[in-house]
Image (tube, rainbow, N blue to C red; front, side, top):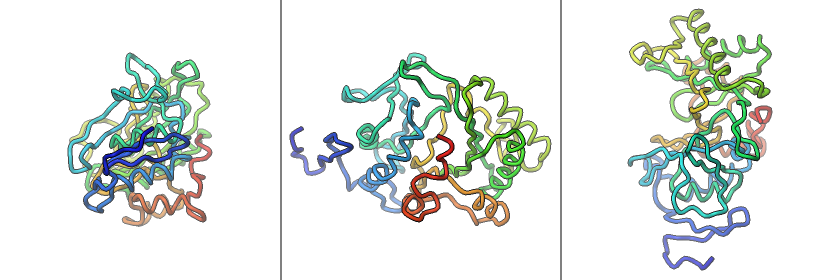
Amino acid sequence: MPEPTDPAKVTVDAGGRRLVVSNLDKVIYPATETTKGEVLNYYATVAPILLAHMASRPVTRVRWPHGVIGDSFFEKNVPSGVPSWIERVTIDAVTYPLVPDLPTLTYLVNLNSLEFHVPQWTVDDDGERQNPNRLVIDLDPGKPADLHECCQVALHLRERLGGLGLELFPVTSGSKGMQLYASLGGDLTSDQVRDLAQQLAQEMTAKHPDLVLWKMTKSLRPGKIFLDWSQNVAAKTTISPYSLRGRDLPCVAAPRTWAEVEAGAADRGAVEQVMLEDMLDRLGPGGIDEGGRLLADLL
């Protein structure tokens, strides 16, 4: 590949492929002056961990061409003009990219993809959709509720699903709320997992009516935690753990310990969303999520 002549473009080695990346000094998050180069560096650093959670899953991206203060758009299809080496899979007439390696991830981030969303199911080597291998419960707080109430509800759900033999893994979403994941054996269909999640949400609402809501009606949400069971529908996606979010601040969908959740349930403000730099510290040597250990059993 010839060296780019445009000073705004740089050739980098990404997992053995030489790629041209551009506009590294462009500010993506004005509130923190976080640049595109820093976003690319974040994704390159977390790639070994993030890629494992997106493996064999069709990836939907959310792109912010002009940074988070500009317009954004969801993109399911493979972008036009992508190189032939990018793997893809067609599901229900949509051709998605697969993201198995650093070159693919770097290519997509260079297109200003900040968020990476995936379903709870994978595809096999022939591109056929498999049964989901994980369940997700999305905890969405309605103001004035926040992560404090999310943590309280998460503890109730941990107790309930623990009684069913399911271990839950908490992830603060990088936006408002959090997700709880459980590993599944692949013997249930997406519809069956959706029904299980819906029944659980209904049960939690009956037991904690002042705190929990299972219906999607927005007028009912203020002050409560909506348990979004629909994230388990086959056509739906959820932000991937370790993905950045396109919000004012460069926050990350960050795995948490149950000790952190317990602290957040006891004390409002004890748990906040995790920002990019803090996520790198958590993943580093001696960090609370060193090497991605907090979700290792979810893979």
